Image (cartoon, rainbow, N blue to C red; front, side, top):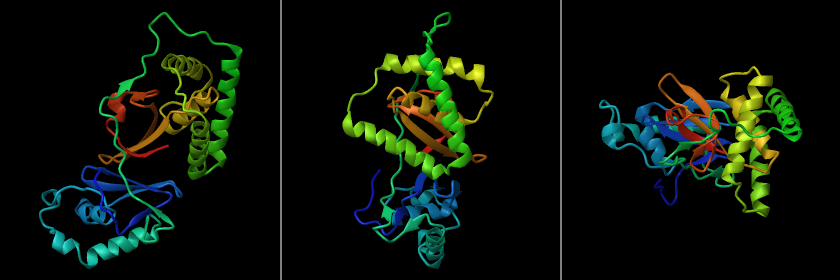
Length: 249
């Protein structure tokens, strides 16, 4: 994603941004809140953030960049600053960027029908340990702290080891998780719980994939999933491709 050398605006540390349907969407992780601009405001605000944006012809026909580059944009910028999403202070901000998703996504292979990995006592113990941790975090910890915890643990591991987990080992662990989960957990269709639960379980075996958060604007929907490289661990390509990534942990 092209960016200007010296953007006039920076994202605050807890803020993330993506571009979907020619519209800038912001995630305020500190308040666990999503917001978006009007489509016609996307190009001038993206330019101030140093981001590439839709061309002028993609703006609403009744608006021109000249009209948007005056007081209207100043008000929008001030609203973003007041909301804690952007800043002009380089000590408190970070460069804005878009997450580029892999062009060739694939799903984890899993096991053939009639075959399954062996589940040992250690797997069950780690499963229940991860379940307790996940429920505790989601009940008592703010989202910002949960994300920081996942990131800190992952960074700490890769700071001392560059060994990537074996693909077969990952396939085995995810399959064990998928076998045990419906036996003891009734939560369904809750992507936040499911993805964090899987991340906690894999961390027991020093496997640290990426935790993706994405959004779509058509009937606004926020989603998250677990992915390593271009391999989706706990979701389907059709589902993840409908969402534009806004944060990857």
